[in-house]
Image 1: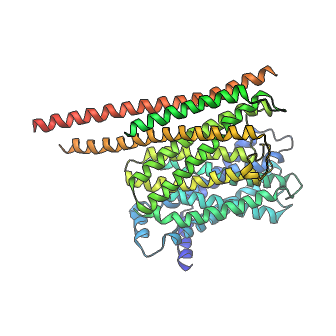
Image 2: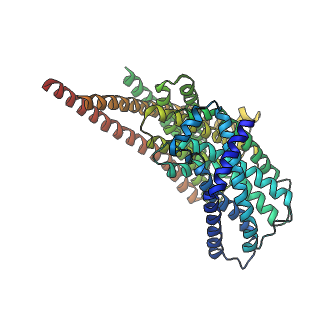
Image 3: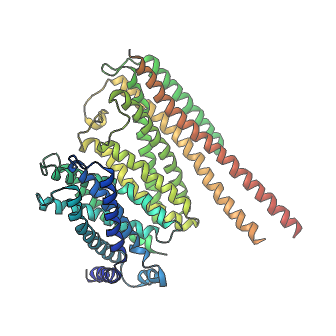
Length: 222
Length: 228
Length: 52
């Protein structure tokens, strides 16, 4: 466990020093939000769309952060050094996943209030549910993104293949998160119907975290 | 010898399909509520079953590769996956045509259809990924992992009929529901067409496998030519 | 029976068969292309070996 946290802290520290991808992700999400608010007619009740849009923004901005995850280890052969070290593959993966989760959480925390202002959405009605949805869905995105970042790090067309592989796998997570967020924004909160989406998020997280931990060593061997 | 068997199976499955078509179009009665359009079922359902079977075989081949590192397992994986993708497209196309008549729209984003679409996208990503990696060992290793990830979506698509109440019709086959929900003659026909399509898919898979082997031979010859 | 019903039924069947046919044709085309390349290379190697 200590090794996992060491890796997580290392990644977070190196990112927070330069703040490259956080700034890029946050700026990108602001740009998309502004563009969307031009495109959509927000004179009417935009709360129907807000849930869906929010997660679209997080998905796109998140890809920027997640792509960097293993890519930042490429210069100076850092990745080879990490793989050759006594650190087990699953610890490396989990450490990076936790760091990415924290970074994505920071981006989301920045984007949510701005979104609330631009789209007149009240996030504070069901703070617990919003937090739970964000946590579960963000972990789902993080696990898939980190795993596929490791997978594509050595490929020729990394920047192209990562979105192509990651976004289809994320469709169910995004859909569940969108449905739940829309429920919360349009007033009823999480009803009995919505529980199936919460179960989907939990199931998705468990299945793909286990699968990633099991297969990461296959990917990391050079 | 192998070719002769392939041709024989191809011809037999072709004849079987034609015999099935005769029954589907001319012998079986119309369904009470839907009319003639329901006959698409006889390709829609077997198409998806064939596709899932192919993906399952690809996942098994991928696990075999990861355990044994046998390059031939990887060849099986790509052959099965490509055939699976074709039958997924068949399932999606037939489903969309049917939906246009029954539901009035070509597509809805209900969970079952969404997961089915995700299947198609993830396996297309698998095929694209293979195209970008030149080194066979690395390609096989990475592709096997992606295949296993993609197979999760297949399992969920299969189970989604039980987990969600959606617009898409529920389970009808008696081995799944434990009771007789549709006419036995129709169910019989479904199984016939399933066998025929799986046999046809097998032929396509063997053809594709042969091409993988030829590609390997080609790479070896190229290396030899370069060294001269 | 509704006329559109039959029409779309045929569209559905046509879609299924067309897909399979196109794939089969693609496979056969790819096979002959690969075979030609293999034969070319084999011939080229034989010629080079004869020269050398």
